[in-house]
Every structure is written in structure tokens, then in C-alpha cells.
Length: 208
Image (cartoon, rainbow, N blue to C red; front, top):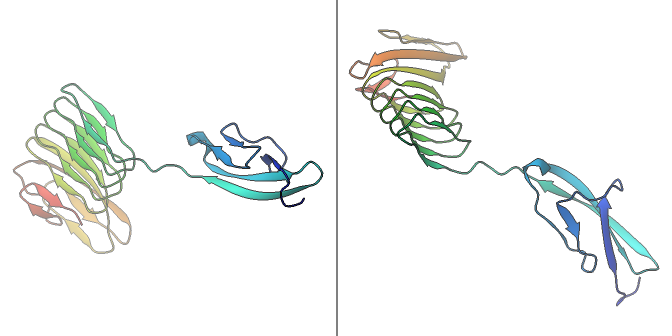
């Protein structure tokens, strides 16, 4: 090849197979372009060849396609029985009226049950959960969660890490641990006190 030669570019996968359908090469400029989808997550190795018609030179490089993080979502339910599921973003959810099923997933979520007998679940992250009115079931699996039971006969399940010692409380709440995860189940009216091993302000628990 000499300076000023007109070059033609081609590309294949490193093993000689054709490129995936989402990626292509401009034969005149050598520019690689494409828009992958969720099914294309991973890495591919591409061999690019430049030729002047008499001689050629090739090089190999890799393209990595990463999965997009779940976006933060803001969802307002209807006055019917809604099923709301979100991913790992920091989500804001208001179930509105109706007996809703809400799975907020991971992330630092804010969830309001509103009226109705709601079933609310959160994953890892620092969540704020307000059951508000009626008889709710709240399953909190988080790091530092704040749970406001609200009015009604609510059932709250809290998964928390225990690094030693033990705790117990009145009613149906209890906790113990020796460096393992423990689960406490508290069933209470909104006016009742949480078990003594929680920090409480009326029916609001700041779980640490």
C-alpha cells in the first residue's frame, strides 16, 4: 500500500463468520456502526481488512454491548385492582384505590399503597413504604427501609441482617441472629407499638 491509495474496507467476525445483522461497516471509510438490542448483550471480536486491490492489512478489535440499567419510573395506578412491577431503578409508585399488587424491585423506591388491601414488596435498597389505608401486606427486603403501616390491620415482613445478639418483642414480632439473616413478622393495628427491637415513632419503623 502507498500513500494516496484508495482503500476498500471489509469486516467479518474474527472467526470469519459474517457480522451480526445489527452492525455494519462502510466500505469506503471503514466506519463501524450499528444499534444493538437487549438480545445482543455481550462481546464480539471484529476483523477489519483494508485493501488497495493489490495488498491488504487486517486488524481485530472488540465491541462490548452492555445491558442498560433499569430506568427510574414514576407510576400512578388506577382505582381498580392494579398489578405494578418495576425494575432496579429508583421508582416512585402510587397504587391509588383498589386491592393492588406492587413489586417495586431493587433500588431506592417510594411506594404508597393508598386505599385498598394492597400487597407491597420491595427488594434491596433504601425504601420508603406507606401502606396508608386498609389492610395491607408489606414485604420489605432492604438496606435501610422506612415503613409506615398506616390505618388498618397490616402484616409487615421485614428481612434484615443481624450481626449478633438477639431481640424479641411483644405481639408476634421477634428477631434473633448470629451473623445470619433473620426475618421478623409483625401483625398489628396502626395504633399498636412495633416490637421493642425496632426504633419506632408511633407506627413508623426506621429499620437499620
